[in-house]
Each structure stands twice: as structure tokens, then as C-alpha cells.
Image (cartoon, rainbow, N blue to C red; front, side, top):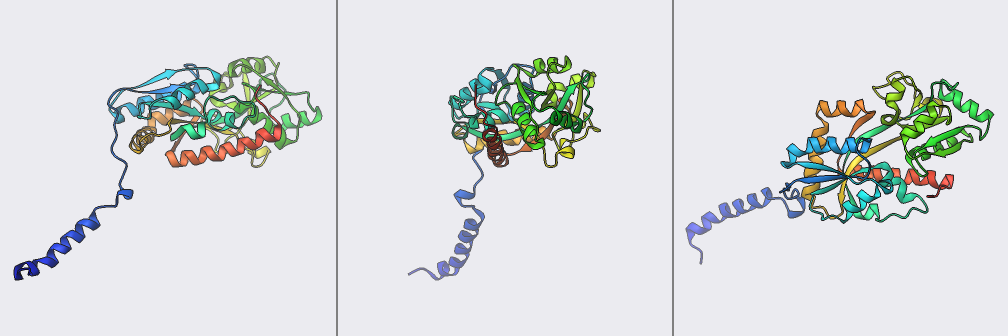
Length: 333
């Protein structure tokens, strides 16, 4: 039989055990295990150095490295509309040391484009980690063109169905789909002309060999500031500090908005701790005024989103762009 002293101590012992049990969270509620890279990490970019995607990757590398405690290198693997890098990232070991700069096109447009022969299933093989920046789109024409507003251009297109053209950087690109959305929303007929890059399209706009293009500001801000291109309207309803007085396309076509984004993904199967560490490093870095200023100067805006919010945005945009693709009957060439 327990001693009298033990019976008196038993309530105290049970109380202590209960307190420890309450203070200790259940395993399902615990935070992800701490993670930090043990050697330099890398971010793969599916486009050439100097472009917007390369800018985003280098900014992320710069702000994430001191927070992760290791150098972060940027590796450009251009080709196949960014899918060479995407495949390499998807096939990499899910150890948090190989990440991918993942733009709207790779994550939401190409997977919905009939005829696309993609080497991976981005939804199944890539994990969203953090969104970084919103790319504001602008509707531009050459300064020698007669139109000084989106409404004037739309009126001219209605008067001459099929006579005016819109430029893009390729069939199925965000610029192509933006032009198709404009055509549908305004009830106009436009001829699509695909170029191998935004700079080549801008040359033809300036020379008046193409009539209009809706593209991200980073592609054309220099020419607009230099007076070679005229900005008719912005596709982002919030506008942009680079062009504070520019009208919005939504003012002419209510509800019309065109933007894209650039974020960071990794191979599916990343440890929860690695996702949390990368996401925290990126979002903390984007809060620095210098980082925000660099984005703004290149026609971008900070768009800090963690993995869940980023995944939800990808799903919404994939459905929206898929609707545009199907309505316009677009196929990969």
C-alpha cells in the first residue's frame, strides 16, 4: 500500500504532469523542423541574363543569402520558354539547395496551352515557395502613331476590323493573351504578330510596322521615358509610380486588368522547414526599402506572398488564362 507521504504528494505530481502535457503541443501543431543550407544554394532562371526574370532571381539571391547563412548563386539556363530551367529544378534533389525563378507564363499559361509539349507537370512537380513581384503591364504604341488614348485606338480598330495589329513575344505568351483579352473585351478585330522578343517588337512599334502591344513595363519603360513609345494606359488598376499620371485600361474597359508576377518555386518534396526558411528570407528581404525601390525602378511592385497565398494565386490565374486560351482557340505553334 502506498505510504501516507506518497498519498499526500500524489495530487502535486499529477498536477505537474498535467501542466507539462498542456504546455507541450501535439506533434501536428509543432513548427516545421529548423532548416538551414549547409553549402551554397542556387536559383535557376529559364531566361537570359539581363531580363526581368534574371533581375528577380538576383534580387532574391542578394536578400536571402545573409538570412540563410550561405551564398545564393544565380544560374541562367535559357531556352524552351523557360522550361529547361523548370525541368532541371523539378529533377533536382528536394533539399532546398536548388530553387527556380517561376514566372506567370511557365506556371499558368504554358500548362493550359494545347499542343505544348512540356517536360514536366508544373502543378505536380514544382512547389510554390514565395511570390516576389507584380509586373505592371502597359498598352504602348509608337510616338508617331495617331492614337493618344486607349479609347482612340479601340475606336480606330472598330472602324477598320482586322487592319490594325498587336505585337507579342510569341504565340501563347502573356503579351499574346493580353492582346486577345483586349480584342474580346473591346469587341475589335486585331492581327496578331509574334516576335522573338519584346525589344524586337518595340523596334517595329517605333517604326510603325506594328500598331500596339500590351507588355510589362520593364520591357518598354526606357523607350516610353525616352519618347520613342507612347504609353496609352496601364493594365494594373493600382497604377505605377514610374507613370503616376497614366490612365488605366479599366477606365476605358471596366474590369479589364492585365498583370503578371514572378516568384520562387522549388522541387516538389521540399522539407517544410526549407520552404519556411526560404519564404521568410524572401519576404523579410522584400520589406527592405532598397529592394522595393529596385523593383519599382524596373516597372515592378513588391508582391510578398507566402507559399499558401502564392499557390492560390497560381491556381486562380491558371484557370483565368485557360479560359482566354480556350475562348481564342490558341494552340502552341
